Image (cartoon, rainbow, N blue to C red; front, side):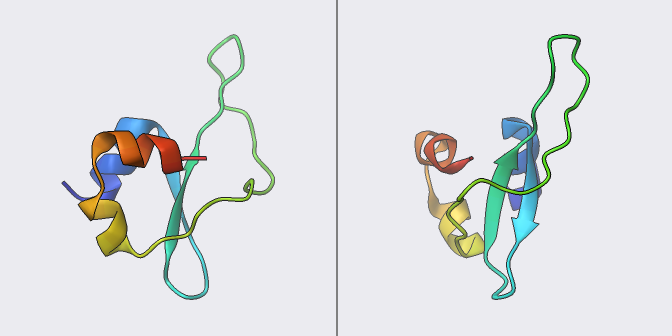
Length: 65
């Protein structure tokens, strides 16, 4: 599974920091299903891609912010 597939499965965007580590930021939708704008990420764990790919589905779900 690729990082893009993980993000798609979790309904998340990929955020990359200056070190090249990534966080998955959950997309938010209103009651009508319209995507809401997030102006800045919540405090998220930025991890190397290899770490994301080595996690189980449950671990990934806990890390998506």
